[in-house]
Image (tube, rainbow, N blue to C red; front, side, top):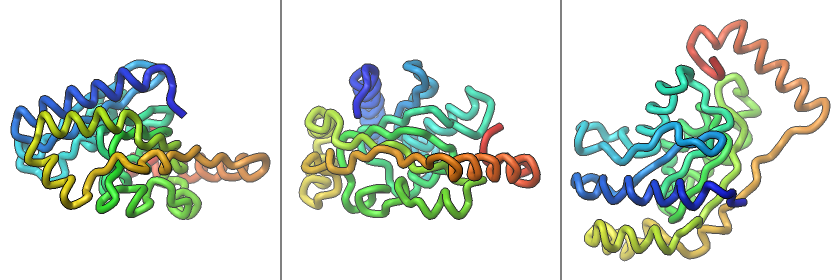
Length: 210
């Protein structure tokens, strides 16, 4: 479900994507916010840093961790103009981001529409000390504006993605899902187990919360 800040933060993503295209990067932008305040905002940086891992979402995650001074981004929302890929989605799960809002779906590479990393309950159930619970997903948000952005800022990219069906506005909203919430004794047990594991072992590797 959209909240009062979503329009502004998504349009910030569009601005970042437009700036990235101006630098001859792919037109992707990502914002991480918490309690209505921007924590980090980054565009794609693959070309500039000659590093294929520097997707906008990953750049924003790293910047947010540095700003907050801890690896966990629990309680944060990540915004991006295109659905995070599977690679970015693992980073989202490991940093415990609570909510993901994207515009265009990515049925070939997406971390929820193709490879459902974002809502794979097995990650958190099996390794709760490492992976957070599935985030809430708001898909297809301002999708038509996102498509117009690509068409104007990166027309060749837009034409190629359109022809191959890489990024689509259609049916993106069907990917929206509320985050599952454990209840009662299950939640209490899981929280206690996670805290014990963090304190007893995994904190040495900077996993989970600070």
